[in-house]
Length: 339
Image 1 (cartoon, rainbow, N blue to C red):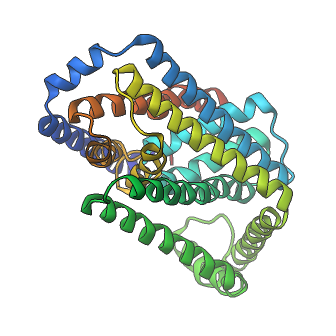
Image 2: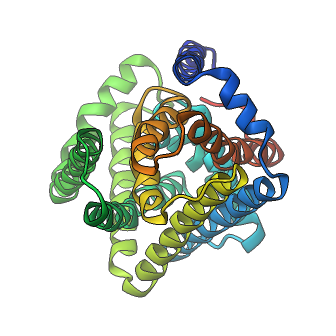
Image 3: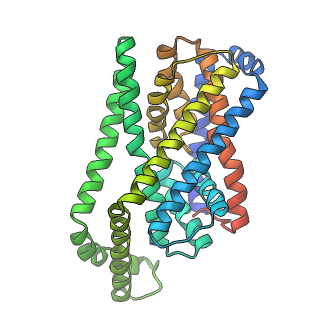
């Protein structure tokens, strides 16, 4: 790990521990532990197996995106590469925003693709995952509204998610609309500053030309993905499959504790809770768990201790399992420094 990034990692790690400690204090550590000890092992194993299915679906999604960009990644290797990308997201603050550069470095090293192409690939996967998640939120909340009154807490969660997602979509739209101006002007602003800092290996003029070329290819790659409609449909379909595998995994976690919860509640709870991944915590650790408990206790009628235990089993499958697989993959592929 780069020495300059250690403070951020330490702050994020202590922050996650603090949030989890508060959650255990509020809900009660003893009831949570008792619920975990009562879990049915076979259904816990099913939760982890379904998490592997989610990883497989989204690794196929990454492989399809890279295929659109002319990058060939073998099927099995794509699984371990995507697991490595999830590992990067889970150990860096701000989730995808912090992990994408590392994931792009991993993809570039394994596939031999240019770094900017790899960055477009992993960024496209993260962005396109938003489309099915919005649909699931609307379907789940819409159906829930026909069966029960929507409480203030859920209204706030949905409103916050809509504002955040809307802001991201707006920023992306502006970035795309003014891409030509960005390519023309931004390198001329950045290159002299990099030269003065001594971070570049070339003079400012050469560096400016290089940045212009890289930015041009970056936007060209985005356009290639957006205009290949067949592959785009397949990518979104794989994303939806991944979300549904997560939904069934959380359903299995509740079943392991002897509870049955409405599927439509989980359809909106999972993408909404993942919005907490934008917090400055490693992969949203602590924040996402707290968001799940906040959403699921009032909407399922299950005791807070059981909800917390189910969420911990689920997060063990979708957070800690990819860290183990992805961490081993990153090490095996030779990415030993997080910069």
